[in-house]
Image (cartoon, rainbow, N blue to C red; front, side, top):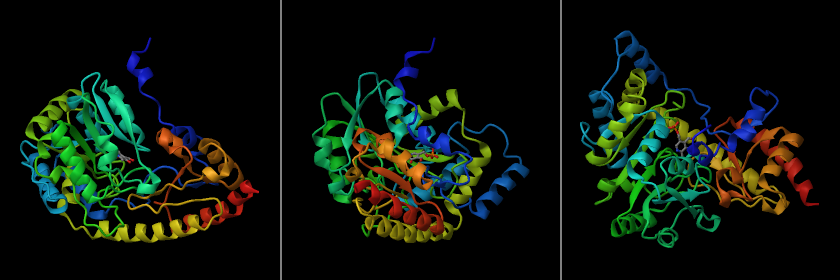
Length: 386
Ligand SMILES: Cc1ncc(COP(=O)(O)O)c(C=O)c1O
C-alpha cells in the first residue's frame, strides 16, 4: 500500500530508546539534544508583540523581507557570509526544513552524496528521500572526529554530486579544522561538487581556532547551501525556525518548493528569529560558558571510568566515548546501563555503521545530573570488565 520511499527512509533509531523513557521521572536522561535553557525573554517578547501587532498572516515564501534583512546582518556579523536578503536567503521550518529542501533541489536519483558517519540521522534519510545514494565518510576518533580532505577525496567518483558537512558534528562533537575545510572546498570546486553545510552547532565550539564557514569561501557560494538553525543557539527547538543561504539560483529553487510544501515557516517564529538575530547576544555567551564548564566535568569524569576511552569533543554538546572494551553491542550496552543505573544514553550505531562501539551522551543538562550520572556509570561500568 505504501510507496517505496517509505521503505527506503528508515525510522530514527534514537526513538527506540527515547520512546521507552518518555515520562519516566526516575531516569537521568542524557539522550536527545535539547538545551535545558529557555528561549531568552527578549525573543519571547518579540513573538508576543508580533501576535498583537497582526503578524499573523501568510508571508513571502522566503519569509518577511525585514526578517531576511536582519538575518543577512547576522550572517555578515557571525559567519562572514554576504547574502542579498531579497534573493539569497530563505527562512525555513528549522534546520530540518532547509535540509529537506536543499536535498530535493540539488539531488537527482542516482547521484552520490557523501555524508558524515557517525552523523545526524536525518542526513541519510534526506538523501534517500531525494533518490540519492548515500556514501558515508567515516569520522575517525584518531582525527578527533573531524573529516579530512583526504577522507573525502578517497570517496569521490564521477557520480558524486554533493557532500553534507556538519561541523561541529552531532553526535561526536568533532570539528573540521579550517585547513581541512579549505581543502575540502577546493576539492568541491575541482570536481564540481555541491555542499550542504549544516551549521546547527555554529556557536558551540570549545577549541581555540577561529571558526570559518565553508559558505564564506571564495567560489563556494554558488555551490553551497549553508544552514543556520536557531534551535540550539537561541534555545528555540520548538519554534521551528532557521535560515538558509546560497546562490539566488539555489535559494530561488528552495523557495519555490517551500511554497508547495509548507508555504513558509510560521510568521511569529520569523519575527522571533529577527529579534534573536539582531538583539543582544549575551544570552548566547552565557549559555556557552555554562556548556563549556559542563563539558569539562563530563570529559574528566568519563575519562576516569575504567574501560572508557574518550576523545574530548571540540564542539556541540555531546560526548562520544569509545565503549568497545565492554565487549557488547552499543545498543545492548544502552539497555544494560539503563536497567542497572537509570542513566539513559544512546547507542553509537543509531548514528551510522561507524558509530558502533560508542555511546552518545548529551550534556545539555544540569551539572547535578551530569555528576549523578557519572557516579552511577563509574559504579557500574567497570563491573562489566571483571
Ligand atoms: C546536526 C543537526 N542538524 C539539524 C538538526 C535539526 O535541527 P532543527 O530542525 O531543530 O533546526 C539537528 C537537531 O538535533 C542536528 O543535530
